[in-house]
Image (cartoon, rainbow, N blue to C red; front, side, top):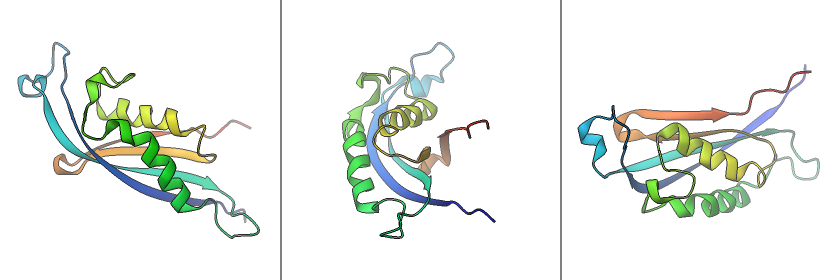
Length: 127
C-alpha cells in the first residue's frame, strides 16, 4: 500500500473589499471588511533525515510573507485582485506560494463569520 502525507498550516488576515459588478448586491458594492482565515495544504513524502515533509515554522514564514500585502488592505487595490471574491483571493495566494512551497496542493480562504470559503486545488497529473 502506497502512502502519502499531507500537512496543513493555517493563516489569517483582516482586509476590506467591494464588488463593482452590475449584479452585486447593493450592500456589497460598498467598502466592507472581513476577518479572513485560510489553510495551505502540502503533500509529499517525509524527508528521510527528519521524518517531516517540510518544517512547519518555515512554511509559516513563507505564507506570512505572501499574505502580508493583504493584511489591513483594500483588496481591490492589490495588484491582481481587482475583483476580490474568495475564489480569486485563494488563487492569488496559491500562485504566489507554488514556487516557494514544493508539494503545494491546495489553498483555502474563508470568511468564518459568514460561513463561507473557497478552495483552489492542484489537479493530479495524468499518468
